[in-house]
Image (cartoon, rainbow, N blue to C red; front, side, top):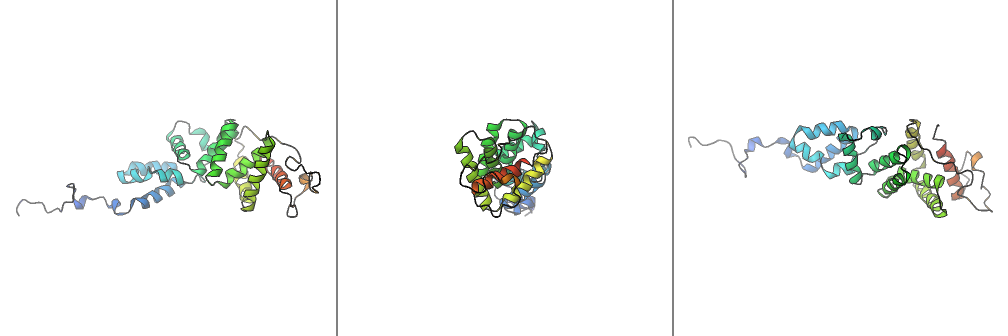
Length: 237
């Protein structure tokens, strides 16, 4: 018919040939892509959000904040973002229960801002969210700076949980890289020898300072004492 439009129209009078091709992919795929983008660069995520409405919607999803990894983001960045958009992004990740972000915020609070109580709360939360490194660090700090016998025992139990999962070595490497940067203003107290093992019949009690191979050590409290010594050696100041 003369004068009629050749453009097929969809519901809502949106021309089919103007449909955004990005909408052809399911939203959850774009969310996964946005999560990978954010895991490599916060700035790239911001650029993605500014690109179009489809990307803005996907990159602003709660799932992105919850699952993005922080491994490639330098820890020192957490100290200097302050009121910049990056800081708000990290805070959003913490609110979403992102274990990586909670761990790094806990590190910042404990070692740089010196708010130890808040730092310990964040590390405990990250541990409950499944972050093994947070559990290791929380256990070490309890063993170094515990005020009560129950805290020391909790530290031993948490460390043993990390040990049985086979993650102690990777935790050491993770924190060795962090504390090598020498950005921390606080360091744990040295509790001295045999802080965990109090047994008068344990044959390895008090010997961990001169032991290099713990494969024959069966006392979990002595193993905790050994790990405290290794942990404190990570601090180079």
